[in-house]
Each structure stands twice: as structure tokens, then as C-alpha cells.
Length: 178
Image 1: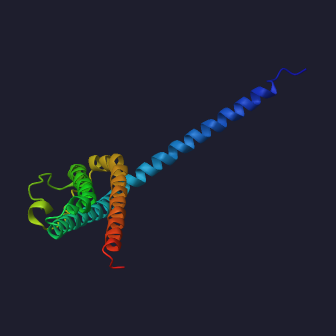
Image 2 (image 1 turned 45 degrees about the vertical axis):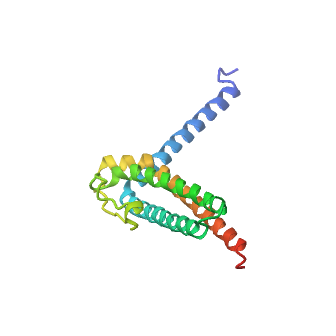
Image 3 (image 1 turned 180 degrees about the vertical axis):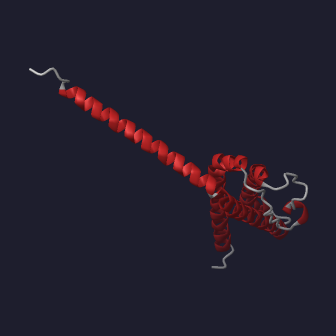
């Protein structure tokens, strides 16, 4: 009778090598995705941050004008609060997102001084700032860690836009203009 390993040991060795192979391939895939993110950082930053800034500024401008219009229409009415409340909530959410965006964007700007930034609340002008800094290794690592946060923020802006459109549709139907 040959002295060999029992069949269960062979199965255990096969499962062990297979698990190790999956672990190595998973590590390589994660590493490759991280490298692709870092290599494409300059283009992704410019496109995503400019688009996000434009959408946030557009929403802020819309809410500012819509609240002003709703208040002027219903100056002496108790209906003012019921019509402007959803707009105010969405406006506050947009303000909060804009603050978060400016904080997160600061590490990618050429000059990290925010004094030259046009604030829509003060000037009424939409600011489009695309003076992003040169992509060094530090900024690429920051992008690697914050990219998902920017994508989540873009998703939140999309939800705010959907709620705004729903509000506009309901207001349009309530006014009898259908």
C-alpha cells in the first residue's frame, strides 16, 4: 500500500491554490483600476469638476430666482410658505453641496485662495473656474481617494434636479396651465 496523501488533502490543496489565485487576480485588478484612475486623473478632474460646478451654479441660480419670484407673487398670502418651502429646502441642500464641493475642489486648484471665487449669492454671476493645478503624484493620490465622493455629489445634484423638475411640474399643474 503506497504511503500517499488521502484524497481530502488533495482537495484541500486544490482549494487553497485556487483561493490564492483568486486573491492574487483580485489584487491585480484593484491595482490596475487604481493605476488607470491615477493616469486619467487630469482629464477626469477637469471634466467632472467643471460639469459639477456648472450644475451646482445653475441650480443655485434657479433657486435664487424661483424663491424671489414666488415671494413677490404671494407677498401678502399665507400660501407663500407652502410654495417656497420645497424650494427653500432644495436651495439649502444645494448650498450645502456647493460648500462641500468648494472644500473638496480646493486641493485641485492652482491657487488655493478662494477670495477670487465669484459667489452667486453676492454677485448673481455664475462662476466657472477651470484653473486646476498641474497633476503631480500627490494630487493623483488625492483624486484616487476622493473620486467616489465627487461621483456621489454628482448623484445628489441629479436627485435635486429631479425634485426641482417634479416641483415645477406640480406647480404648473396647480396653476391650471395644463
